[in-house]
Length: 329
Ligand code: ADP
Ligand code: TRP
Image 1: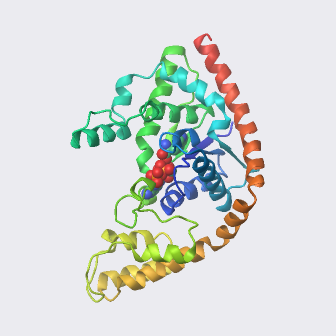
Image 2 (image 1 turned 180 degrees about the horizontal axis):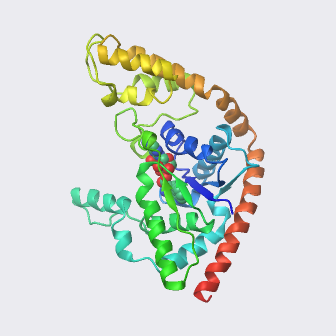
Image 3 (image 1 turned 90 degrees about the vertical axis):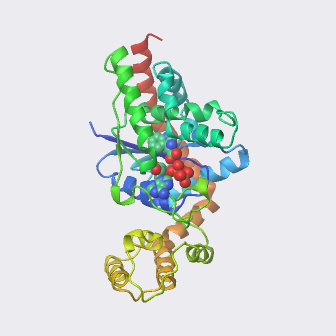
């Protein structure tokens, strides 16, 4: 039986080059080797997006991004999480074997509590049960299609480990029923930095959207924070935010030449920013045309997602039947 790869992206903001390098590109490379299930995690986004129009718009953006960057819907099952209600039924069953203490230790929840305590608020201020249960829903996404590997950026490592833990616990209690997944994290692109040097993230507002209009994207590149060293001074490329983004987009020979000029002195940040903006424009020119076309013909996206949902649901139904039998429901 072919091995299964699965990953999801939340429609909580416009997809950015951190998503592209950290997950979209590596996931698309797995398609030859695995049965691939790549989905729009709209139920996860509901923890932060509380505007129906925005939710719909961003879901289209995530779908169009996958398709524009090369996802072939004949070879990869692409769907909306909310079209597969089995995910939700499995979430409840899994939550009945998941220790609450495990959830208390989840990074996102712990960070929210720490931020509240630092600000003198009560520890669970603003924390919804959705945020608290988030990792169980994610375990269910993964387990419901019998995923073997889950390509993600390093911020999702703990979540995939939780999915492993939960599957193993279930199997211990009810007998071998669930496949135990593992994360696939490419060290080279595990954490892409944003324009301010922190991890690129929609929640920090430091992201470079993939399909932003090229002139606006160039302006954003000009805002990447660098130090104030003069062009002639030698610089360490591995600690420079700008180089750490550029190295993923320049051609290998350009990147090698720029690296040498950093080390010997003789390159100014303005020049590198210009090279990066050009490289981004070149890399995404063709996908951008496909993206714009899809966003102008959403009925095509609807059709692809409906087909994906039917295919994903078939697999999900089979898992649920197995799980229901195992627990006696
Ligand atoms: P964000 O942090 O911007 O909200 P998501 O949580 O939607 O991004 O992430 C979707 C996928 O993209 C996940 O697999 C995540 O690990 C990956 N990812 C997000 N940001 C980065 C980044 N800066 N570098 C590498 N991978 C990332
Ligand atoms: N939690 C992931 C994120 O914030 C998105 C996601 C939801 C996911 N379900 C998933 C990723 C299942 C991989 C597998 O990026």
